[in-house]
Length: 270
Image 1 (cartoon, one colour):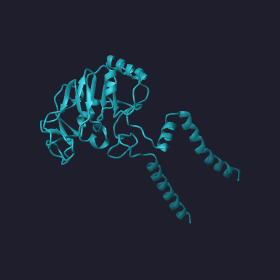
Image 2 (tube, one colour; image 1 turned 45 degrees about the vertical axis):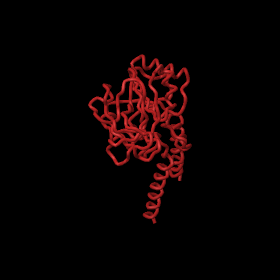
Image 3 (cartoon, one colour; image 1 turned 135 degrees about the vertical axis):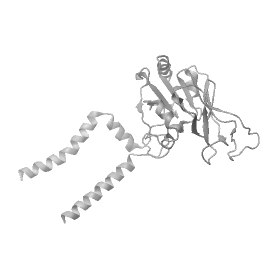
Image 4 (cartoon, rainbow, N blue to C red; image 1 turned 30 degrees about the vertical axis):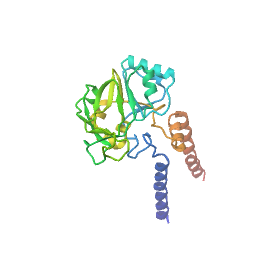
């Protein structure tokens, strides 16, 4: 009977663990809580929510921004850049263009459905980009695999596609109609400000495709207040809220210990 009880307990523990993992993960693209191919759980980075507290000389990544920046926040970023910080903005739909204007940059993200005959896989959107600029994140890197990137206009080009690239406007995977071959810049910079036209460079599935680039970045911060690295999962958000507040963690630990202490106390009294 005791053996059966232990077997039931083990099953309950395993089932509880599986349920916990399922409840505390998400499939939302770019989310830090997404352990799938399109999440960023494997990216070694620390999240920061208050841009006023940016440490000088750090590297900040704004990944697929989907929330506006206030004038004060843009000011914090300008000060950060002026103090020697490095800012990387990875955007493919043009959401970062307003911030770029507020930062005084002439670079802009131009969303296009880029495809190329020069690629490493059968998918025409997985394009081989060639490093053409001299920037530390690309030191020792000759090519970068990008996934349907946007074009980046202005600034000093850092990554360009081959001339066998076109804007596949009709999505048929081949050059047709008014579509023509041309090189496109998919990354550029102005000083310490770098714009990447492909946020997917940082998702779990792409990290192994560009290991030297990721390694060159070193320790990075992610702007969690505007980037699409969060989640709408209420269970996950509750757990994250608790983890960020030590008193809440201590209170929950106390609640978990109390039943055990009560049980042992009853045994001693018996």
